[in-house]
Length: 134
Image (cartoon, rainbow, N blue to C red):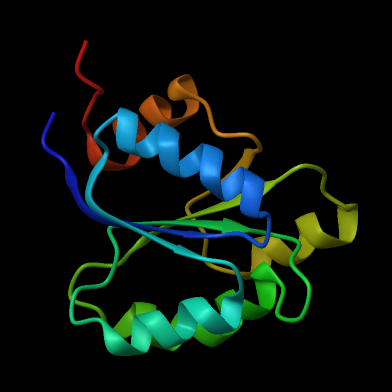
């Protein structure tokens, strides 16, 4: 499979980030994998990079700047990119108010945690027309 240029994983859960990083590296999903533990940290990284990520995996519920607040701040950057980043929100549980709010934001999908090989393969097929190598 041709790798994505880069993936940005934004989640405040260090243990989850460790497991997701290992999974994405084992599956050879991207040339580069960047991990941020907050929305503020990820916005700072996005401001410094010349190459926006192909895929953004974003936790809905984080202290400080939530995933939805991050999206509101990120939308102008996303629209200015030559190739828009695919944004997938990650969650363990969703409040009905949050689901309604997600409808107002531009995301490409919502996925339950934890990531699995099957979920990653589904994302790659749906959004990038790629499949994990057997």
